[in-house]
Image (tube, rainbow, N blue to C red; front, side):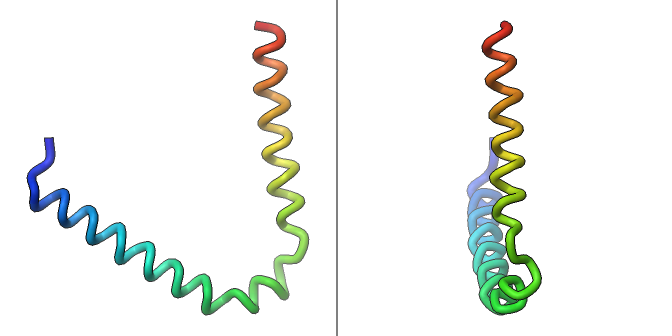
Length: 61
């Protein structure tokens, strides 16, 4: 399916990407805490809405 070279490249790319994203997140953490207060509630509401849709689907199926 994939050659050894492709698998190694994919693994190294993923590791490098994760490290860079983590570094950038840590660098902007103070700014995010200042400007994006309360966004966790939006995430909880979104997950709750999706769960409600799934529950209704399984109840009426």
